[in-house]
Amino acid sequence: MKTKHIAMEFKTEKKDPQGLEKMSASERPFSKQNYYMMGVCLGLIILGFLLMSGGGSTLENGFNPDIFSTRRIVVGPLLSFLGFLLMAFAIIRKPK
Image (cartoon, rainbow, N blue to C red; front, side, top):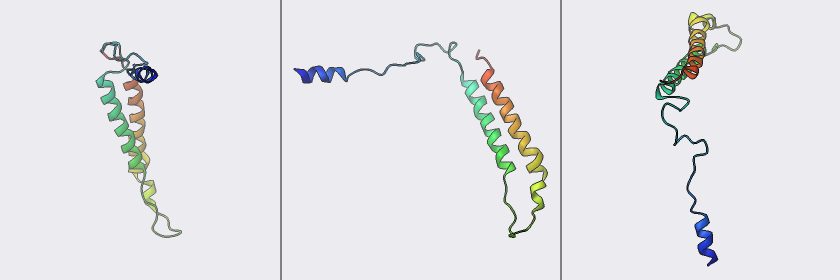
């Protein structure tokens, strides 16, 4: 008889600790649009960091003037900054 009692104890259902299943769409903190905006902003941040990166010099003690290119100094940081700025907006924006 104890085995039946033990088996019944393990048949507990998963519960939602935060209660998100019971919340309506208007009560949730983020909507689908917020998540899409955050994804686009994350893409901008990654693109900015990729534009800032680049290879070094092929020579051992050589100087590569490409480290001072407009792409690395202006465009990459600007895209990353805009991504971070818009990410804050995407988080703060209230769903309709």
